[in-house]
Length: 415
Image 1 (cartoon, helix red, strand yellow):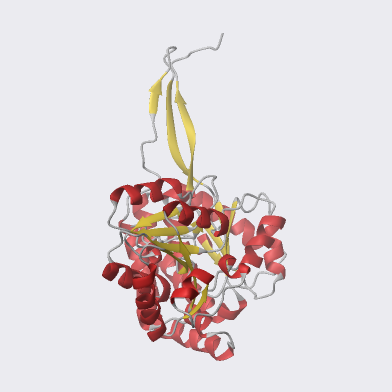
Image 2 (cartoon, rainbow, N blue to C red):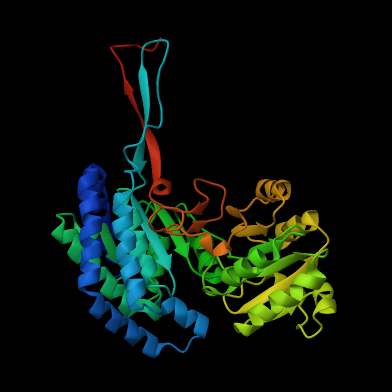
């Protein structure tokens, strides 16, 4: 791609592609998704080579490198995600309501694509493929800007997606990527009111803050993934041990990883030492409050700010709480409204937690790492929305549509 960053061509091409996609039948969009998946599989070696080049340049932490790494399994998962999206119902062919007014006018509310989506993301190159798939399924064009650390990987993935789009007879400008790692392009996107209809930042706190402060168009944003797992006094100890280990350590660098353990004081003396031993064995470190350290004395003392920290690493904040009310109050004070879980065999306690914790996703007796579009049956996700306008939780194809009205009359005149 040879567009100059500031010449606007990338934006005008996206707008033209969005119009074409909005008119394209579901079968054509699904064919494009399957062709893109096939191209990713066919070009997997080139994607791996590009990813190795990105990794060779990286001096980041192990957790960050894990987010950057594209193994053969992760490349296949990217392709499978596109195939899975293709099998979903068409979000543009839903019945949103039809009614007849007393004067005989028939009013239909119909789904519509948003238009041109701008996506700014960091480190995880597979995010670009996920976003492309979600946007294509919902009839939206997308402009992607990945992090400089994953530039080669993102370009290789983009080349495969463009091949698939051309093979399916769709405009390859339906999915475009920043032609340069220059940060000036981020500024161009933030200022592109009228060219980009919705901006989705997916990255660290500083990126999200900049987008929210500078964007000249609506933003679908998420806060930190400051996720909690609360182990209630009626929790099954063995289930709690298994779930917590997965919630914290399956992948520490994703936004759905548990960052804080809250454990009920009634069971903490017997269960907390076992939980700590399990996680320590797997390489986890801890930041604990005084009540937790009274039970496991060698835990590192937590600073006040530790309970407001998204570690994205093998570090877990730990607090002992006197009951469910205190657990919910802690989440309200320190959480980011992303994903929070309760582990308990008490259905009434679980119902209280699910109803009272106002996070985008709340879970009962399972891992916070299930906050994921693929796990929700969306095929993939373009991000996790934690705001209260338009969408919350994993954002799939349906969440990237809006609606409009079609009105049919028989010559009625308004008096």
